[in-house]
Structures are given as structure tokens and as C-alpha cells.
Amino acid sequence: MTYINRRMMVQGTAVLGLGLATGTLLTAPKASAADAAASANPAGAMDAAAKERPVSLNGWTSEEQADDVSTVWTRPVPGTGLTVATRIGDVEAVLIHLLRRHHYEIDELRRGDITGWQHPSGLDPATPGSNLASGTAVRIRPGHYPAGTAGGWFPEQLTVLRDILAELDGVVRWSGDDKRPDESLFSIDVAPNSPRLPRLAAKLRGLREHPGRAAGAPADPQAAHRRKAAEALARQQRATAR
Image (cartoon, rainbow, N blue to C red; front, side):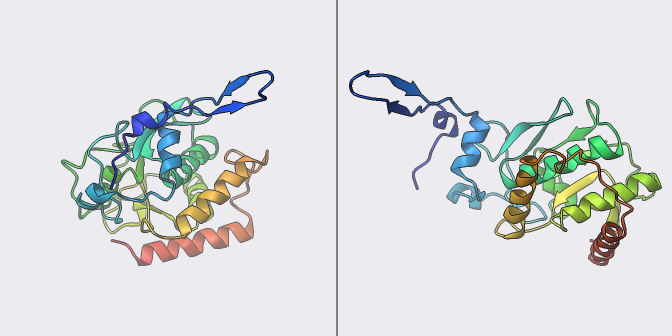
């Protein structure tokens, strides 16, 4: 398979002729390196070399580095002034939506409050924390919640968190529901080839096109139908606790 250096992808420009008489040329604006990589690989397909690398607990390929010949790039979290290293494309769309709703509806996120990709060395591949190595997980306030214990979230915060998870339709798992709780960790909980992830990502991108519907829009997590969905998902995820 031909190897493509992703850093070279963004150096191409499209030139359009506007008329032989005028000879006027327009050059298309350059995309960012991360956007070009996402566009070139929208489904997160792995090349032959990637298939030989270890995978995280959720089945996604681990990455040895970020921001250079990688599926993981440091991306902005709009509205927060923060960035996070995440797998580009659909994973990015879902995890950043989660972070934005937390920022707007639970508690403002500040510098140091979120972490994403981590190098696979030192991460146990048999634990949910290994999902950080594939760029498919984030931590919110790492170190803030005691390891292996639950109860670090206030009841009002937990209500909103359950509503966010329900909106994400089980595509994201909160490790606060695991047998050994890790209340800072949120991971993609579907396989790389699952149609549920691109379907959800498309829905979230669509919300951004409609003012008042994207992350930060007023929501009532106490509404009966929303609470019902949140409670149902909580029961489901607890039943499959690792």
C-alpha cells in the first residue's frame, strides 16, 4: 500500500481557471493538517502497519505519538479555550461534544482539567485506561476523584452527566460505572467498524448547524423522557461493568 505522509497532504492547493480571457486564478485555502488527515481517512481505517500495533480495551489501535503521522491530533474544545489530544474524525466529534456540555452545564473546565491521548507505555491494555492510548478516551479532572471509589460527583452534576451520556446513546462509557470506578474517565464504547459512531457524530455535527440546539443550549435533564432514557442507559452500563 502506498504510504502517504499526512504532513504533505495540506500542501496541495486547488487552482480554478475563471476564464481564458482574464487568466484569473484562485487558490483554495489550506486546511489544517489535522483536518486534512480526518478528510483523507473519515472512517478511521487502519493501514497495514497500524493493524500490527496493539489495541486498547475497546478495540481501537493504539498510537505511539500524536500530531505527526498519527490518527491523534491536539484539537480545540470550542468555547473553553482548551485543547485535547483525541482521535480525529467521528471520535473527536463525540468526545468534544461531551467536554463542551460538561463545561456549559456541569462545571467550567479550566487549564489542566482535561487530558486525552497518552502513550501506551505504562497503560495496562486490560483496563479502560488503555483507551487513552488510542485517542478514544478523555479524562475530566484527572486525579480529582479517588481511584477505585464512587461518589465524587454531586447529585445535580450526576443528573446532568447521565443526561449527556444518554444523548450520546451509549457510544460513550463512563468508567464511574465500572467495578473499579474511575470517575474521571470517559471512553468510546463501540468497535471501530460500528455504524453507531458515525451515525451519532453526524447527528452532533448537524446540531451545530442549528443555533440553540448544540452543546450549551438550554436543556432540562429533569424532563421525564430525558430522565427515563438516562436511567435506562445507567442500568445497562452498570450491568456490563468491567
